[in-house]
Length: 108
Picture 1 (cartoon, rainbow, N blue to C red):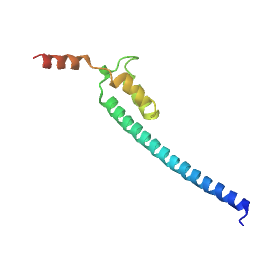
Picture 2 (cartoon, one colour):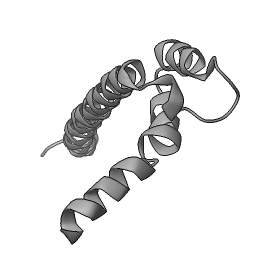
Picture 3 (cartoon, one colour):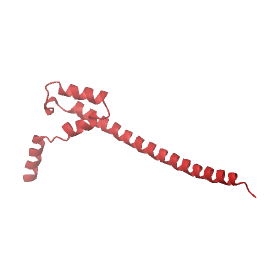
Picture 4 (cartoon, rainbow, N blue to C red):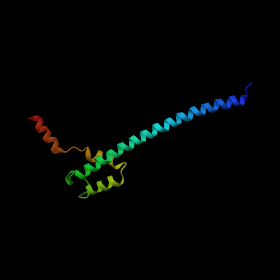
């Protein structure tokens, strides 16, 4: 006859083993998600940095003549949140001259 204690420890051990494997798999999945988010933020950072460098001073409206320099410094040194804010405030803003040129081309 088998000891009840050994049966109980066998059940608990196998249950804990299954739980630890599931926890390990979940941690690997979360790691991949974090890596993908990090790569996405890095790509957005590069895109906003290049856009800010190429954009002329006249495209920036707001605090004055140093706005381009301010955006460059913010994008370089605070690189997680500022590219998203830059994309929303500056990059998505439509250029009225480009829109009127597109309307003229379509209308002809």
